[in-house]
Length: 547
Image 1 (cartoon, rainbow, N blue to C red):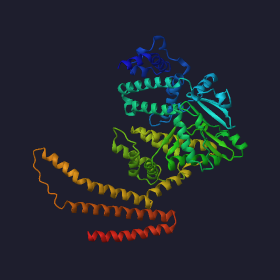
Image 2: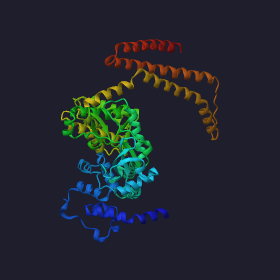
Image 3: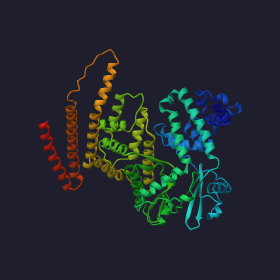
């Protein structure tokens, strides 16, 4: 308690700066609702005047983030990717936040390199450019040449940024708790949980060791992909504050003139970029969460080189299949399937009217009754889905938010390169593969085997469970007599029933899987599956009659 009080006193000037900025830019109502206007000095309680229209709160929020520095710029960028929390006017305005800031002195950069490497950079590098090639709120990048002649990029964390960010994060968490208590309309959006998630994301971005592992993982995943180039990492010169990686030239993905000079077709670049991201999402489950034009370079031959590996999302196999369920449910006009997929993806709310939810879901499904994945406007679909989620105050898991952000961003990049770009056409084969993978005979057989193991384990544990239940009853007022005579026979019957159930599941899986393969795959494999299913069905009938 004493330590927390000392920390609050230490951060008091920063509290005042944040609250004064809110009041200057016309958010006096928020400060008053939090009952914190007493922390702001009288001279600071002055509105900005006519420079900003009173009704333009979205623009004022962006200016507040710019005014308060790196942590709040990052917060604004996070909120710009949360259309489930903020209206489109706010997300569009906050998306304009730029991470470009004034670079710090080269002498400070050299001091950090010396501290991290244990020796001056001049003893390890052939040369280093004192002028940074990029400067952001958390780091800046210098071009350097190693002793062996390789040209690399040195990403160096800003001096003291970790302490500044931690102080701001502590304040944000306290303000979020206060807002959750005093601003009732914010309670459904769980600002405290949002602050914690933001803290986790920003701390990972500050630790360059995490980004290094991400780059190494991506390089291994795309090692055999000729259309993608992942920069290599130089481990001996990489630490938690410095990341040494291959220097990437080429041109920006939105530089149409540069693409023309390299004789690269922009339409092919759009398709390749989309396929790389969709491969990461649906095949690998580990995807770039910020594929904006500044993070995508194009090399000769139309090879795509993604940059900035600080923000990545993850989806396990089940969630990837649930996303496929959601999209196919929309196409098949299956409202129940859409709602089940949303629930399985943990898109839920605390106080939801189930009738209104189903009604609006049915309307959303009906609006896409005439479309297919090849003709769908994915951006519009995701936008309407987000609007549906906001209407019913549902919560979206963070990685799913990153997924939506990535797909909308890459679709925008593709449309800028080729007005006829259709991400739905690129998405279709991924969804089809996910569907086929679910009903693959080997997958069904594996799941059936696991089910049989679970049932057998339950039968094995049943004696202990019954024994414990009896002891509980004996401690009460009831007298219970339980006869365990012929219990072995009971276990055998349970085992036989579990095996029969497993065989039935395998049979159903073989029939469904073979039917799907017959439509899209080799007929010989499908007929083989039908043959196995027929044999298994006869065995199942014989075993049932025998039992």
